[in-house]
Image (cartoon, rainbow, N blue to C red; front, side):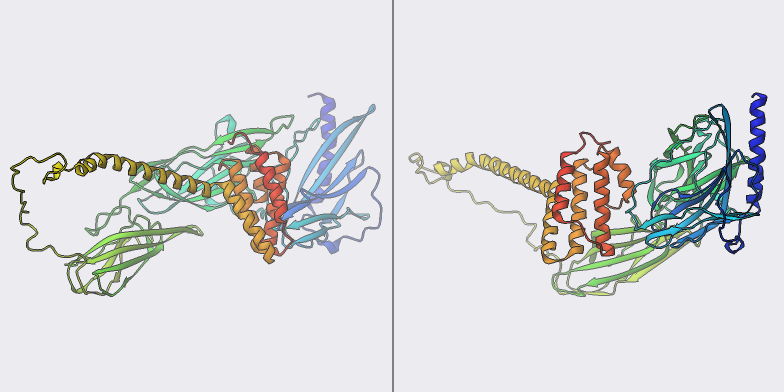
Length: 635
């Protein structure tokens, strides 16, 4: 580096340090401490306010920044600053400041500009268009105001997809700001996210990924949680491409990606981290079980030119050790893998008085854990047998825990008439919350059978059958006119035609099954279902039921996209920004993807916010465009 460049850097550093030092004295100014703006900005000084995007969704965090630029001037003494009014938004934490010095050649003269940027993080709290500011900055002599900024807050899923931040390129300084941090600087770091040292791989110097399992040693069948953390040094965007591979586990997603980054110090360096996803996982067997790597795609800065570079990052495999519960105190009937907490069991029998010897016994289980494989223990009753006929289970996430509800139905069959005490149905599990074996039971009560469930065999059932042979013929008789069945032509026609009849019936049965399969496939075809949903929407429109019509139209668009992508994209549950990202990746044109996302957002607003819904004819045109522009290949 030449002495001339060193001199330029020193001049810029002195000016930057003066402004930054004065800003540091006013990190938490009171707006009343600034005088009303009375003077124009001095020559060479500019003041601007802006947000990172003009349209945000309710609950999103937006960056509101104030920039003070000084060109070829003496250090400016700043006494304070404030964001002004922020209606419809909530301020998060304290503002952050950064300083940048840039030299540009104008003609034969070198212009040096120092810019101080003050950023606030705001969370959208109410719908509508809001005016932020005007933000103020003050010196010892006067106070100046920046232009106000308008931000439009819309419902969830209705904001257009944010554009990727453009990479910066500067002549002398390498600057690339980390992602915005919507958090108090002194908020503690998640203990599971802490990292002792940086990874060694060159690909992980800007971004890396970790899967953390807590706890990593547990009883087979019990729940543990796998967290996917991403860490960034200079980052523009990150997306999860592949979740961890849970080959030997049952898995349930617990959380969606976090929308804010949190500061963390790793090996003395300032980084940010975020939790991408969390999964509840249940080991299905004992031993050392491996969780395969997760994968993300990142776009980050690359060296001096600050190019946006896309790169994939994989996490390291993680090992979980699953063991059996302790043998001490283990009941003889316990099955390894049956694990639950807060277990409750109930049962009922219907009818109590059975005319045919059959009754339906329903056993219901509920609790914390995965109850799909927990085996109810039915009683042993002389004269009554239990046959399972139906088994239904439902599992859902309750915060960080998984809850289940299960219903098992048995056919209780009595082999004779009488009154039977059925005893109780029991469920035996290992309770990890209390570290003990637990039993829950439900009384089945009494069953009165009026008759046996099946007819008892008769006493002559085992006797040998008798066969009387016809007397021998004395005269052969004429053909077809004899007294023996073998002499009749009809008998031989039946004997020869029976195989042909069987083959004909089998062919007819196969043809019938084929027709049924085709009819069912036609009914389940996404294109057919899209037209059916569109027809239902028209019926609701004629009846004036706008909300039901909007629901049918949204379903029609979903089926249309599913048909066009051959099932690769399911729009149900996706936000507008996710649609604008996924549909072009699936081969749709960006304009058509925008049209689909906008229409679905309008339909959602009509269903839940009372807005005007698009008409069925408009959606029909959109379905035609989706079908005509269907991608030739889907990823």
